Image 1 (tube, rainbow, N blue to C red):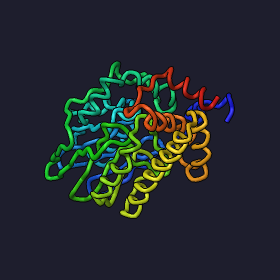
Image 2: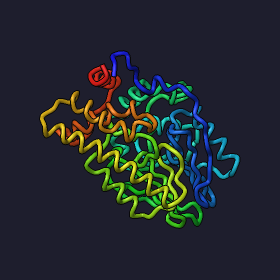
Image 3: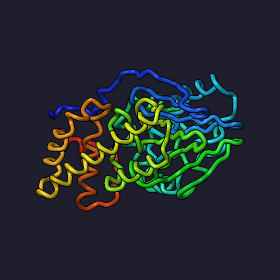
Length: 319
């Protein structure tokens, strides 16, 4: 690691190939080689979109794909969590309702502005045509706690909070009739989980709660759509292993009285052989280890990331 290392995402400039595929009778996946995914549910009378893309200009491509298969109105947008890269495209869909957990709403109130500035600074490529984002925050029009059921005609769609993990507000979209799940960033596939706002102690149990639904197909937050129970199990296990491995390495370092810098270098070296080929590994590790160190020492809840804090952290760990 050297002093000139840029934010890993700044070095990541390649356009990604988009895939739009059907994963069950009513569920579709919009995926882009490790870039943030969007999940789509096409019901009897309306369409629901989970996670919007980072800007309205980018959301336009999702809408174009939806329109190739249905002309039903896009009535609902679901925010699986509050991160800017997931929510700032919402305006493009002109939905009747933007749905989120109350915990997600509370996070937008508490840290939405700082997160927006931080993410745009970290991920310039992921915010194409950022000028198309309306000013201010993307606000839910309806919130729930625990569970909410929508009926798209005869199709039952459940929004479930199954525990904290990627954030405290994580929501999944579940189609019980066909056992299809849109997981948001609770599950990643061959892509490094971002854990800067995470609850490391809770996340593995939350994944077990997802597994208990016995999904047959799953759209992860990043990575290819998982279309068999075996692939779903692999996605859940991979995410769970990564979170557990970061946590055990950091805990070990903290128990030995090592500082954040030393713990970061040890954890990076320990995880690189197993996970280094995953998308955005270099980018996520400083954030993940910093948050994990916080949780293992004195901060049960994630501290707010600001653009300034990002740069300070990056210099400390990568400088």
